[in-house]
Image 1 (cartoon, rainbow, N blue to C red):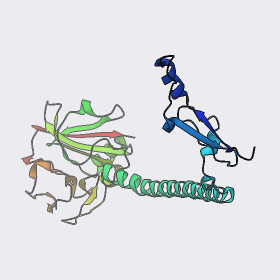
Image 2: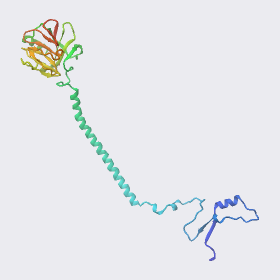
Image 3: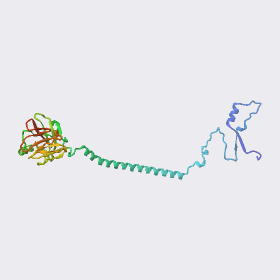
Amino acid sequence: MAGYDQTIHYISQQAFNYAGQYPAPTQYMQSIPTQQLYSYNLNQQTSYLDPYVPNKNPKQNVPQDTNVNKAQTNNLNSQTKRSQICTKRCVVMCLICIGILLLIAAAFTVPLVVILTLPPDSNGSLSLYGVQLNLNPSSLPNSWSQCYTATYATSMGTTNLNTILSACNKNMLLLGCRQTGNTIMDVAAMGYRADVLYNCATTSNCRNVANGVGWYYSDVYSWGFANGTDSVTRSICDTSSTNAGYRLCWHTENIDGYRCGSVITYGNNYEKVIYHSN
């Protein structure tokens, strides 16, 4: 046996198919090209397989150096987990900071909205702000009622004032004037009792600005108002002509008359009107 070659030659499947499809005549020997023969050496571990036969053991084709070190993989997974935890913590901290900023903004915004919404010197109980022109009493809240009316020909001395203020005894007062027989008041303004009855005595330019109205009162001089921060000139009653249509003044020293807006009157053609409410 020593004279034999230990290499075994085999014929591929394609060669057999070729021989089957094209048989040689019986008188000739079938010749198979030598290049279609593949060798297998018994002394070698590496095989040369038929390219037409699928490899039934694919694991043999995986190179040894492609295996990933398990320790490196575990280390990579650990780093990934730490990164994810850090990211989650950062997100939570950001959300907390945003919440705190929103609370701070709300704390400053709400008072600002209240300041911008409510008129000066008003706590929301007064339904009208500033001097009103052509005011219809029917537009007032139901709590308001008329407590006094008289023509400009009627004087308002100390005795009459005591009677008037006893009848008009509620916390809020509205002063107005209108043409006799009319319901609509030409000029009117409302305020809290303490503001409307602010005692200016006989000081010419005295006024108490509240609810957008400059109020003045004296039971021996005059009683009335001007618009906002407009100045007054009280020569007994206010004679200023600035925004004259927004002014009202009544004499309070036993003489009749004076102004309803820009109209100066001493007669029965205009009425003084007072409403009150709590």
